[in-house]
Structures are given as C-alpha cells and as structure tokens.
Amino acid sequence: MCQIFAGQHPERYETVTRRLRLNGQSTSIRLERAFWHILDDIAARQGVTTPAFISKLHAEVLELHGEARNFTSLLRCACTIHLGEDQHIPRAIAAE
Image (cartoon, rainbow, N blue to C red; front, side):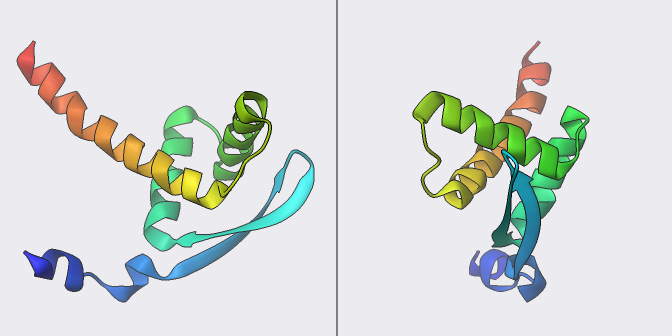
C-alpha cells in the first residue's frame, strides 16, 4: 500500500508558483502540481480560467469571512472536496 504514496513521481508533488490577480491585487500562489491540475479541472468544468475561478473563490471567502487566512490551504481543501464529490457521483447514479 505504501507504494501508492511513496512510489508516486516527484513531479506530482513539486511546488509550482503561479502569478494572478485577486481583487485587483497582483499576487502569487504556490501549490503542488497535483493541486494545480485539480484546480485547472474545476475551473474548466465551471467554464472559466483557473485565475478567474480562484479570484471568484477568494472574493466569496472575503464576503463570508472578511478575510482569507491561509488561502492556499483553503485551495487544497477545496480540491479534496472536489475529489470527494467526483467519487460520489458514480455511486449515486448506480443507486438510481
């Protein structure tokens, strides 16, 4: 079982920094490559670019909470939620 985790290609967890604008401010976000792939997928499913998706998410967080503490962690958690939803879709269809 450990080979699933230990055997993964190092490129998957290599950090990648992307520059983008959040609420008009230029910033950079550093995430592991695997998380960028997930965010790219979420954005594509929403029909927007990845920077537009992240900016919208950031604006929603500010609206709900007034600040976006540790936004990169929030992005990682959003990715895990997205992956969990994808896993539940086939089961729901199969149950119908």
